[in-house]
Length: 333
Ligand code: FE2
Image (cartoon, rainbow, N blue to C red; front, side):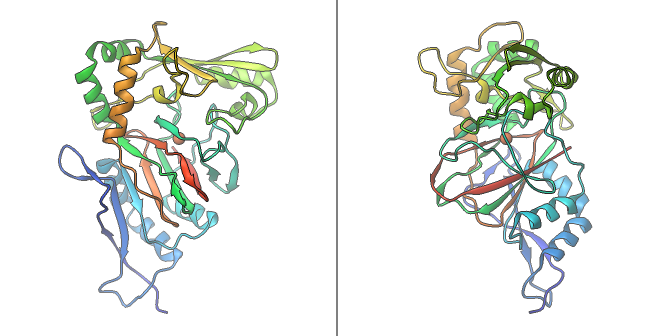
């Protein structure tokens, strides 16, 4: 069967939502073979097209926040690694990260080891340290039976809506930032989405090396036997990058422990304003609702590659209702 060159074509999906300017979020690209002599494409063609059109793809990513590549011949973790390599962005090392993740091949890791039946709240990747990845790749290796989407949402929309509804809280957040606290043992706990041990987080068994690596990330470690209390921050919770728009750049939803009466979230983390004040429960309830209203959740298809601008977009994971599901990730600077 003939193979060869193709052009990227933008396609639409019912789940997309418009930006303020009407452009759809995310962009969805598929191969267009019309006008070529080919009837199918190979992975190599996809890699070559990425290299040839990298400036255009990057500007699309920066305009739209995320690109879903659908219908390309990416069939295995090593194919996915080749796609990531074709973009040529430097790899971001996962030092100081809170999840437990395992290398699959090359630059490809499991996205999170925690049980797929558990959802993961919205966050910017590694917003709690100064050295966060700027781009995230996800790959659907095994299509979910049901559920298990990776919802995404434009962060500046969340900032605008929260500022409208909770101006005082947002002003405090801008002034003081957030302090994130996590209690980590010396063994990974894959039952939790923030279950990475301090040894995994800082890639060492040595407490003083861990302290040193943590301090470079603005993080302090306090020891309770072999368990570390990891205190990150205060770090800014609202940021503006190149676009000049303010983004809701934080891990508040992941770290919040829920109102004192109902511990609905993860038990090993907490978060407070940088001045020690608590995050108001009413603002959190609105915040979680706004995320759900504004997000886009496209059901995964085998072979999908999703490229997310981590400076513009928050991501999450919906609980898997019917197995299987295997979604892998690669983080870039
Ligand atoms: Fe994440």
